Image (cartoon, rainbow, N blue to C red):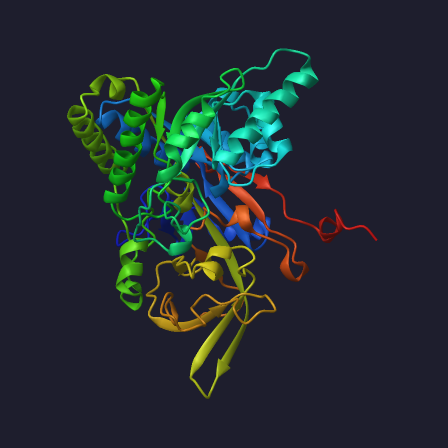
Length: 479
């Protein structure tokens, strides 16, 4: 494989990760077209070194504020076992949202004390599994759920024939904090389905302290939402939780062990801004956010210290551990989708040229649900000027399976820019698609799901998800 690297790098490139070599896209030095030739198309490609680099950026931010911070990777963003293995080897912990994610986290080697369990509707079986494992914390989403955890502890104790071992819980709050992200990604509003409202917090703590033989309240949790472009919502969240922590201590004498700020640290999806001016300003601000984790932590701690001083409660702050649950910021730009142009058509009436690919929204649900922007490039002609307009679409039997906003809401560009004269057989790449893509894909139209590979150090490529066969489509059908 040639080592020729162009000096005039396109804006989307990332040194030592996404580069142009011999006119093709290269991922950690591996030719994207060779990957498609070996593993077929469409294909998910992940970079082990980029995952590690993103985690190192977070842990370095914690070092910069001189305060111990625990990071729990939000596995809902991507729970592939090889991804989880890379996260584990990088030295951070994990947050899960289902019994399945808990199963995968334990199977890959996370210790129970490295696991947090979130979610609004945990089943009895899921709670039993969490209690049996003895995980670090179950984030309780309502006062009612406190009783469900207690019941789970009783069931597990009865089945084991041993005295109950208290489950560790944290209370998830919803203090009405808005962000400049999509409404569907904001989770700290009273209109969202998540958490316990501020007016119920003291009642929730009183309830959770009734049966210390069954549950131990170790923390409070808030998540302002995904892709938050500003530091203020994180600071306000910390202020709200700190005030509750102090009020709880004064009323009950109970001291909490941690404050969990959740996730939401954004990814810059507009590293290449060639089509940014075709997006509304608020979309540009959100998708192009470049918020440093260190800025979030510094401001949160500034608020905490200020509040602690005013409340004469510095001793409480010193004993509280700060937790973060990053997901998107670890995996989004560490993955991409390679897709092949299968068909081309021209509309004389409109002058449009349509490129029909083999990657639809069943692989990238956010592109349909949220009109999410994934920057599209030609992997076959990665160094060619991208100044021709195309309508690009996937293979699904659905008019909404397009790479633009068919509803004309302006949330995606009307066209995608690629080199001139793109032909069937050429490979395209949707960048920054490592989060909420592989984890959300589904078999619409009876389409087998694609393979995924991980590029390791030295250009070694490992298959981390095999491509489905048609037989896989029948695995759970009964007839």
